[in-house]
Amino acid sequence: MRFTGALPSASKIEAQRRTLRGQYERFQAYRSSDEYARYKSLRNQVESGDTTNEKEYKALSKSRALKQFRQQEERGVFDELERREELFFDDFDGVSLDKGRWLTRFFWGDVLLKRPYSISTDPHCYTDGQNVRVEDGRLVIETRPEQKESLCWDAKLGLMNKLYYYTSGVVCTGSSFRMPYGRVEAKVRFRSQPGVYHALYLVGNKMYPQIDVFRTDPNDNRIIRGAFNEGVPQRNGGVEVRRTEEEMGRLPFGSEYFILSVEWQPGKMVWSINGMPYMERKVTLSGEPMYLVFASGVEQGMSPEGVSTLEVAWVRCLSPLR
Image (cartoon, rainbow, N blue to C red; front, side, top):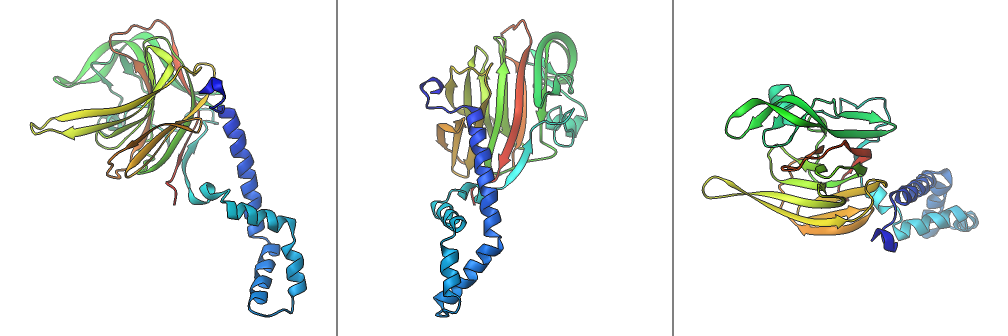
């Protein structure tokens, strides 16, 4: 798609949005202007049969600003801006990560343990922010080969210490921000060694459902997958995980930024890249608020040799269309 011209670049989308935002500000300014208020007052007078100020009304009706305003209003140019609310935004423009918004550990590790933890079956452990930094207006999560002992969770043995040979990072909004429905989008790029994956997902207080806004393919960093992971209770008390996914890629994620997004409502989800939908699924969601998790790691059975990075220029969450 990208190379046939069907997929616009992230920078082009951002330029279009800035232009639209500027037009919307002028639209709002005219809507609250004295000229428009006077026009509406005179229109009401004329429509009620009072022609005292009909000449002034006709003059105002020819206003170029009014004509443009009415055209934009009739065409619904700003419908999305009018019908959505920005719920969360971070463009990482500070000198360090905003700890009021982001945890550098898993949410339940913070709530229950007051410390980070990792998973025993992963080849990597998650440090408490040592693999996370803000640099040049970007959030950077780094996965690198290095030995480190870490607290981890094992399904059979519970909490234990383990020596890992890779470290990585995770950030989440579990303590600061959650949303039940709407749109999440992030401008990202990733520089990966074979064997490393990067992801942005949404999850609530339970493990499932989980929405993967994207997860990279550890074998090919030109490929991402959007997915919906659902936990279906079984008669024996267990849970069957059902994953619905779609692949999108062979794109230069290492050199270019892309805007990856998902929008969901009670019965439907749509995944997009640079504004172009590539997967739509009917789903059943309870409306439980979900929080954002950026994470990187090493795929089981693989042994990457160098450093890999996930870079996030910004992330935005919008309310559903009203």
